[in-house]
Image 1: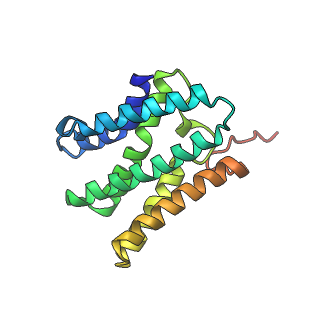
Image 2: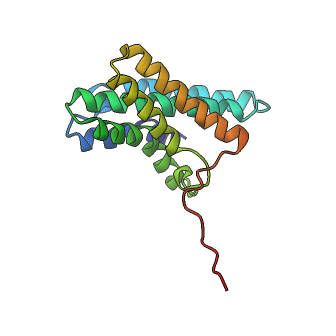
Length: 174
């Protein structure tokens, strides 16, 4: 549980820092590890002692976490002086890569490869951040707007079954 939880929580940010040639955040500041281990402990206790609670709450926390990691990745890249397109890519990397590594370790098809909105929600949240940023909207509203769009789209996809029908199999005509 600790390995899977740690990879999920810190994997995307680790890759981001490596790509940006920055010190890896959790090595530079071990407080991230304390927060990660504490969160893992709370999640295990939550699952163990409240087994009848809907999986919806875990999905809600996952959506919020993905949105926050997306924003952190965007901001860290912008602070490092990257262009907005690089910052959007770093946001998505930070937001999704930990979950991708988790799914691979658990021998599951990664969420980003399934027929549901996942990485697209990160991208849309990032575009919202970028649009508000370029319009010189107050910094706090860039964060709030990006967070809202990402979480809204992710939860909407889970609730209503929204799917990104970008790649469809072609039907052979006879």
